[in-house]
Image 1 (cartoon, rainbow, N blue to C red):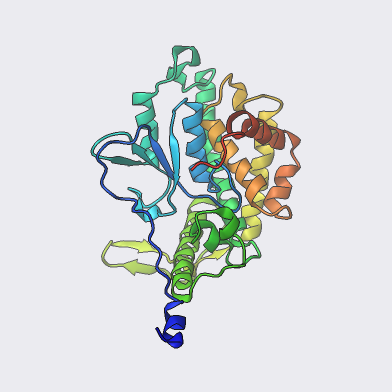
Image 2 (cartoon, helix red, strand yellow):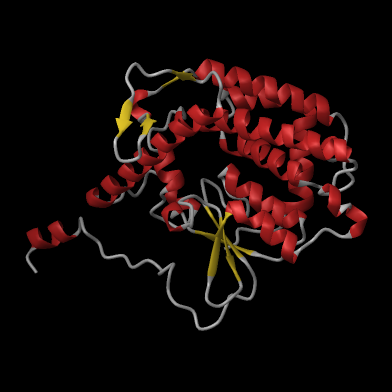
Length: 318
């Protein structure tokens, strides 16, 4: 083959990826949680706080499960990860919104942990937990998204959510750049992810969006819609709301082992740990959200305690 032709084909290397949707003759031996990963460092926890939240909740509920790094949110039932592949034939992939119901049917809490109260000490604390979960999933989640969008490395989001390499050590180095057509697709997917994230911030934060000057009317859907490119993030307000949320959470946690003084980890703890771990392990040390978290020693101690007790030693599966 001529040298010029070889040079041309070098830009289009053949790489065969494992088929995520291949038919199976037998069900998997245990549930498999599809998550984003592996991220900038090897390890069991996903870098994505939403995925990590469900990893932790499954752990806290005593489920024996595997994880699989998919990075294909479009393959999930609701177009978002995580999703749980159940050990059944035919394969049944359920969205995150259905995992709680599946848990209640297959892994109910023992009577000693007050299943009628979802594991909380009293009905008042069960009701209170919903407010704290809402606070974290709105204020902290919005701030994490904003901080990720403003990490100085321009292609950080691209390599984080759409890695070309299955290993963190190669996905997060500048030594090997992908060929042009592949990098173009990778950048396009990352740009779509950033736009979805911007709309998520608009949905989650009450003060984080400067309203657009023009709105587009969707004649097909018959409702008002707004495009991500029409929105302007008010980063300072999003960060201020997150700092207030962190201060309130730190005050309520105090010196307790688990949030609200529960004797065992609850759904609230899975949510709280997911955001704290993401903030402390993924965001740069100089990021405002990480600095705000470090002001509260009990939050850092809580995150380390949960990590050491539940995650450390699990390796970098898969």
